[in-house]
Length: 317
Image (cartoon, rainbow, N blue to C red; front, side, top):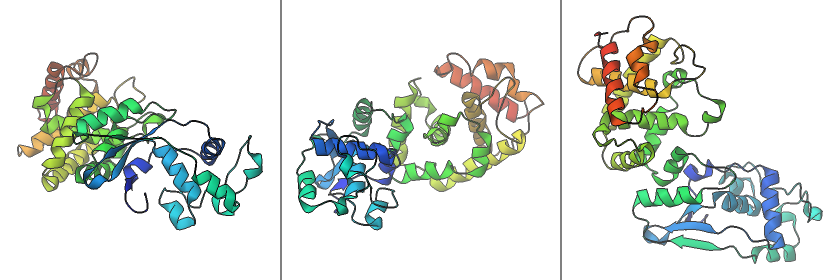
């Protein structure tokens, strides 16, 4: 079904294929033993194509194991077919690939059942996101942005992922090690556009608000204009900071404060104004810090910090 396009496990999902070969092998062993596995949830798209909602680790592992050659393994971002290792119950299978198994063992494996549950009426992407996240409670938990990448696939998602790779933008962010590869950087790009273009609908519920904006931007977005402004704003802030965006006493970038500054610079540019470098110590500005701390998700706080950031970069400090 994956080869024929009847089952969609797109690259956005497969980036979450994180099991190592021992973890994959243990799942294959469980299938051989007939142990119950959690259901695989799919959503039915137009044309009756199934889209994976929960179960990409299991499906990708099966595809990796059943791959007949390196080309087939590449479809799930693996270089070669899976060779079983670390099996304790079926230790005789260690070191074997599917192609090397006796035919009767291959047939036995192919007849093991897996439960598939197809979700209906999934045209509403907000509903699909909610279902995906509720099901996403396994050992490797996806972040909200990783879920968005799966649910809101398309041109806009590809666009913000591309911008997240920008060298100047990345140099501004000093994140925790765990946040460097979990979609946090991409979510910062998304927040920039959402705060700039969608804040009249900001209600303090960040996750759902970003989902709504993602859906809106998927339908209507000025890519050329927005990319130009983003690049100019990022380049200017990069020059002003001369390194990661930091403030006194912080080991990582204060992202709430960072977002307000980048958005404010972009708005000045869109208004035809030239941003200016604030006075020394501006990262520790008392008003900017106060409106970026506790309670920062309140709309009033958002308005306060954006206004102060615009004063700082507008030469009114």
